[in-house]
Image (cartoon, rainbow, N blue to C red; front, side, top):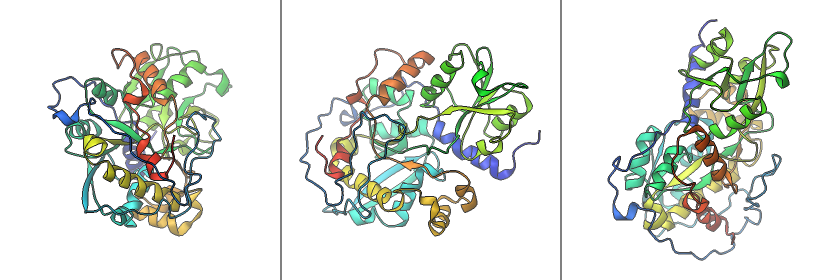
Length: 385
């Protein structure tokens, strides 16, 4: 089979960042200040109702796939500018992936500026950014509660997952695809002793949905052979028989969708974000006003521009393509993401179970409150838990 074309290669490379691998951190990886440890006290802050955000919160225990994400009215929550202009440094391991769209559009539309925030986005690999976040050299990391993040928190890093990012639309088939044998159906696929092509390591959040797919097909992480492949190799290897199954992302899965020789076995759970925004000590305890303002601008952007099927608006898709440096036709080829700032109950527990099964974490599981802090978006939308 020929190698993917230049665009497909770029799309794959961009998608890799969603599944970035964070290695296990050792206590000597970074020198942290006293403020950068999880023992720092966070005081409860008053929460007042916010106009236009009566539906700005949903039950985090609702894990139904068809649950509607929280939404305020367009333009809400309204800006509440800080007393002085405040610099916030955000790291991301890509600037082009669609799940970053609310961040990029918030910058382009001046939503952060309305809060008197001077937001700078730095392109940094996820493993490089994590110790900088713990030290306070950056303020926000757009990433996920990977195994490395949890290992860092266990060692004392004052880092919290403060907002979700997205869940897939019902029509998305981003996820686990298998090559079928002649006459075989998806339900008949057994994955035990098969080779799985992957861009990821076992410390990625994608191990959680991958573990669920393996269990449905008579396998687990110990009974399959993982083959690490480069971004341009995954699809080619699946097609030419180099691997039996592979995790394909937007928009790559469209290359095999509808082909009777392949079957989609499952992907990220619908209605459950697995990544988003991580705050370090600067916003958690140093300047929580700026932390709330940052999420207020981010949430307002989601409510105003990403409330529903945002790809129905061709003019906005063009604008989105300019912000993400991606062709509009490519964005339109896959369903709109369900942008979602909320974090579900139990997601961290499910992730930790998958990491433990994969052997990438040690020690007792962390309590959810050691990893998650919903208070910033609660205050932004005026919800008293």
